[in-house]
Length: 106
Image 1 (cartoon, rainbow, N blue to C red):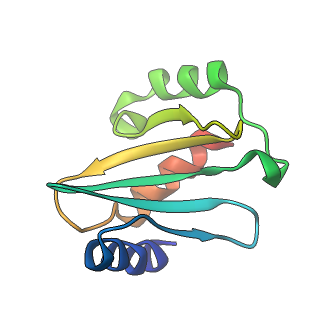
Image 2 (spheres, rainbow, N blue to C red; image 1 turned 90 degrees about the vertical axis):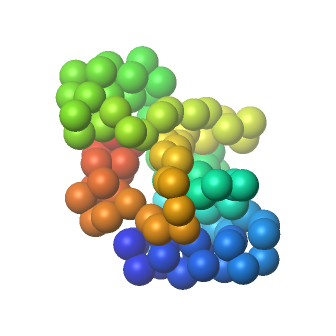
């Protein structure tokens, strides 16, 4: 996932537009270009059939802010749950940070 996000990051930076990918398991990865950095988003669209509950997600995040605090929960208009993290440059979170994002969503 880290390598795919790095490619999405480069594409978003080069094109100045959102880059996204849908994984085989239904998880969606998005990279939003910002004026200074990027917003990396990981989550489950409603159509994936995967359900996350906001209260559970917030409780899990609050229970270990050192691990999960950089990821901000968001529910998109389609009903899907995501976590977002802002980067200061065009780099992506490392493998451990991406694992933390997926843990939050389970």
